[in-house]
Image 1 (cartoon, helix red, strand yellow):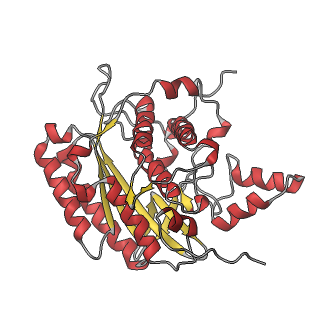
Image 2 (image 1 turned 30 degrees about the horizontal axis):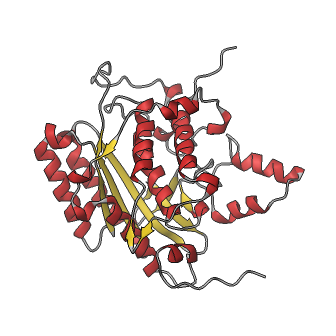
Image 3 (image 1 turned 180 degrees about the vertical axis):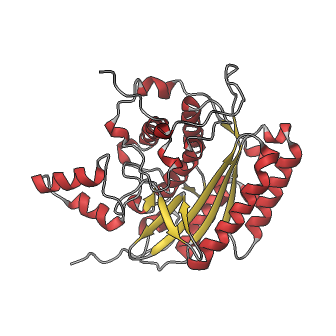
Length: 345
């Protein structure tokens, strides 16, 4: 019997996880702070974006939802580099992507006994119980539940970081206004219920927007800067401009709608992504070595929207809003005073 071809999301997560693993040898995250300045790992971001192109080379193909996930994975990776508790940052660096921190702590404390192994398999396997772990973080705002792309939260603190990401690689003029309107609405909804959380919005805009539709690109940049200045909206807004080539064989026509049985999990509310460990991804190593090249164009990003300013603003907001006894590793890495919490008895 022929093996089933892994879905696009399974392939993407396998490549994403392998990329992050290479960037964190022995599980260690490098310190992004250098003399008080946040230095994001742009090389890892470029690799993650290359993973997307290896699976979906057509920027007009938005059916799978995989493209925007690269930004989510990178921002979550950066928050872990900043020193925040890895399991509190979602999407996590392993399946399941969203899991309450207390349950994650329970899993890590279990000894290898039969009952413990069965519990791990139940929670970390391909079909975990609904409502306990998930592929997506759904957060109740002021008026409605919103799927938030990058979250840091725990039972004790509630949401401390809420970051939404959007990506636009084609049809710039057609979709620009919709993206900004969505961002405004989401900010008001989330801010209304979580006024102490660090609220962020990261926008990925392909570099061709600045040559193919200059007016739309300039309008978008202007709107993002205005959004960044609103006192009751986001605490940080970032612009990421990837530059890449589309293979000549890729057509630009509208992709056909997938069959119901082939819909990507990210297009189905409440569905969990397939466990990457449950499907063999052919030639994973060679695929990582031959990814399409992506370059981040920092020359097209205004300083106030740059990734380093965006990430530093989010990290500093959280540290400013929390007691000195919380997030000691993040405070240490940022060169701030900290007090180690007393161990629990």
